[in-house]
Amino acid sequence: MSESGPVAAEVVSPARIRRAAWAVVAVFVANGFMFANWASRVPTARDALDLSPSRLGLVLLAASVGALIGLPLSGLVVERLGARRALVTFAVVDTLGMSVIGAGIALPSVVVLVVGLVLAGLGSGVWDASMNLEGGVVERVHGRSLMPRFHAGFSFGTMAGAGAGALASWAGIPFGLHLVIAAAVTLAAVIMAVH
Image (tube, rainbow, N blue to C red; front, side):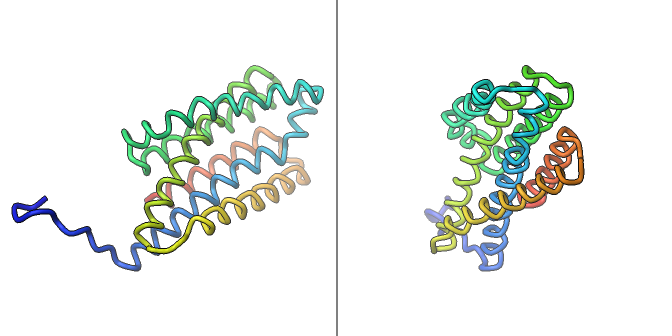
């Protein structure tokens, strides 16, 4: 507030609003891309660890445990860190978790895989909440509905991630190496989009 009373809302240039909208789209794409790289290789994880369908289902619950821990805390985290820092921090947690998943497959170790899944679920849950909050802010400033486009970005990311996973499998790239590369690409995209 200025001495003469409340300051009018900051006027944001249309170009800045467009850049912000594209940055949010990029973050949604990156989230979908990371998830689908993992999901496309679940059969490889199952085979590497010789998991029965029921045991695989139990192992995959670890990601839900991580998300259940993260989602209720996401509002507090975003309030404390701000959406931008929360998003980057938990994108790091998610991509770290994906790298640990890769290590769990390479070793092979179900325990390491479960730790990676919990981290990935936690990171992805808070990342998801943060990007949706940021998307809501950009949508409000833009003055028109943008969330369907943001979520379409996630879908495009999942298509790209599934394609990358299929290509990596076809090329014989080891699962662990594939996830580390996908995590590095994802994190780089998020950092570029946020800045």
